[in-house]
Length: 293
Image (cartoon, rainbow, N blue to C red; front, side, top):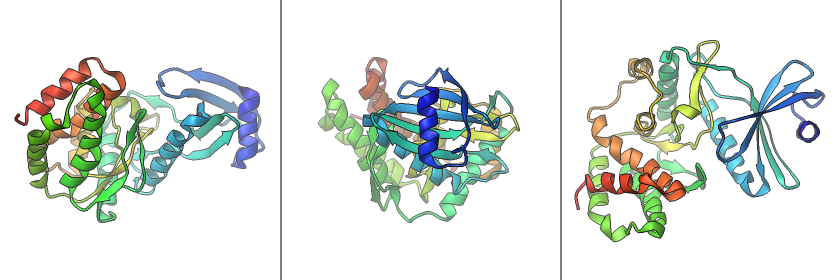
């Protein structure tokens, strides 16, 4: 891998073009791409993702999300990795990011940093909800497009595509018609402006750096109600009271937020059901049925 990574650096013409790759170590945890710690002769370290040519668009979408998030992040609270290169060499795709050491420190800065990102982007939003092109949520396609209202965006561009995909394991759109109408009604009551969201904010995509600042990475970004990020943090755990208190200190959540958690997390549960199957299927149906039959 050293020779291949060296070739990537030479081709990319980035700040490390004249540096030699001295060590490459695989990193566990990734379920889609391979991940590596790359050490250079100048003492710097890089984080690298590698995948096949067929998955290049996944890395491209990730890089686009990272760049957009960085444009609204407050560096006093939140770190988002720098992108050093995104390259395609023959049948291999590469994404090189800055290496950041992660600790299990206080999550107050992570909460404050996320709130600042949401608020700053909301104050400078594009006027519509959605994203300009298809991207990815895990290995699933996250449908691109724009809608003027939040309810239309979430139902049309997030839930309906997942439900259509779920037809392969038996979930029918006709069985969800009344429940979707009720969800649309609930979301229509929520007066919100678009915020740039991470979009896939579980504990594996966030943390705290050694300098105490919050850290987010591996996004599936789009312009949405900020609550979708907060809702997902409750789905698999890993975020403590310090995180939520820090967030609320900067930008308190809207009244009735708890009533919308199931709607927002249904998107991720359906996506998991469509990718992994198993108990996610039953959990999807259970959430849908909470909104009537």
